[in-house]
Length: 398
Image (tube, rainbow, N blue to C red; front, top):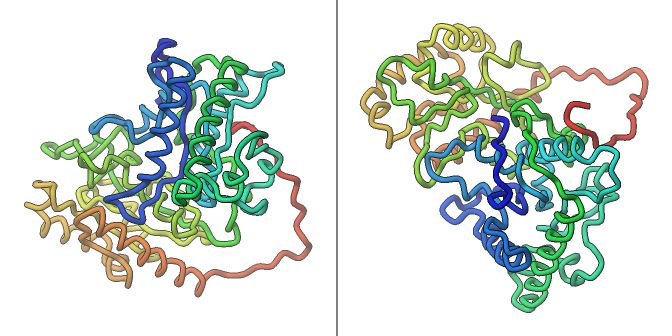
């Protein structure tokens, strides 16, 4: 997943990085989509390019989600970050930032060029809502409407009296994108796998005093499935497991859960049960289990180990997956046999049949996990005040 390098005319002029909303899945992010469409129209007019911008909503149904993101990050000329409180809590937004930053630093080393990262204010933000290393960035360039700084893009879109201010802001952003792309002249360059990168906001994000939620994925890759199991819901790694995959929902379940937790004000750590090692004592955990995976020898062994110290479980049983529906009772029995203590916990959900049901179940499981963690976690105050170095924004491998 290093990203294909595209011919110049096919490269997106900008990549829109934003924190998804899941408040109303049937109508999610429509204001962001409108902003993206308006910005593409103005960038297209300004540049004459056939591919003004990239947003993850453009990924075709059935497309490889990580591959399309990597391709866009490897080829875009400018990175537009849609700043909001949720943006800096999103692990995936941070990984997108880290991937582009690594590419930009490699190509601009020693050159006197401006930043190819352009902030766009989705919501007005206080200084303490922006990570300290980014507080020196010019979030509102000269000449932009005052209403944009006061209300953010979302505010001037929603408030009718700011209609002209919104159109002017989008036009000025398009001009800035064109100008910055020409000044930076950033050529295509392959990027590392997003899974290997760390968000630069993770060291001191807003809300960092709250414990991060560990989401452990118990699923197989498509190559390890039992004979006859449909690979439609799986990918090359467990992180690409998408149990509710459909035309309306193409995001892997781990990424989707992380986005939901961001909305709820939680940071999240996403890994596979075979990656996590011993579960850290300082992390409330929720286990996302594919019922088809519990018979896998290695995964089953790891789950039995985890069940000795129970953890809240959510098990997707997609009602639209005919194989799962036909064998639901058998799969549920296997799940209960391998995780008897965890599935019995209050807040665990053994049969989650839809995306909407998953979104309802996740906060309940997280709340129970956090409550249990706060009751049992040991507190060890430091003997001496810790020394905290001033944070700096560095490349992901620094």
